[in-house]
Amino acid sequence: MLIVVTADQDIRNWTQDPQSNSGAWGTVWGIPRSLAQQDASTALRNQINGLPPAEPICLSGHGNDKEIGDEVGGWTWTVADLARILANVQPRSGPLFIRACAKSVVNYSARLAYELEKNQAQPGLWCYGYRIAIDIRAHYPRPQNLDKDVDLQGTQVSRRLAPVLR
Image (cartoon, rainbow, N blue to C red):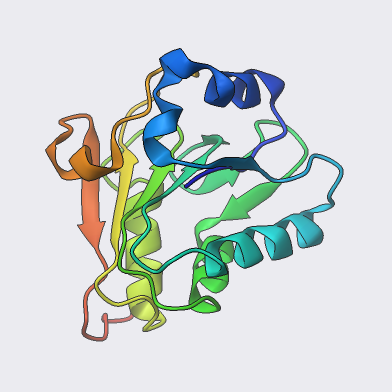
């Protein structure tokens, strides 16, 4: 499932365009634009929790190495915010793809995997994301090929307790 986590109409429109390859993700759902941050987080959690555990999930929005959501104003989920949401859903075995810009190898998806590991949540989950800025109109990769896409970085949540960084 592809979940749009931004109110940005350009991204919402692109997910509806057949040329985007968003159809490879099955259902495309956008958080209702009228929701405030807390209600948007609840809607996101409920949507993820309602999916079969093995279904791949793509979260699409603006972002950087530490946040995903809207560029200015609107919704924003830090790594810790999304980790809390994922800690409160059924165990996931399908991959999670963060389709947002990044600037480094220590990107949002890698930070998310570490945060989940630290909190002993979602062991074994693969988190994928970019380590570069991407164009809004970049094609969505196929969920079954995330591990083969050279533009993506994958990080698996360890099944053991992570050391606490100080």
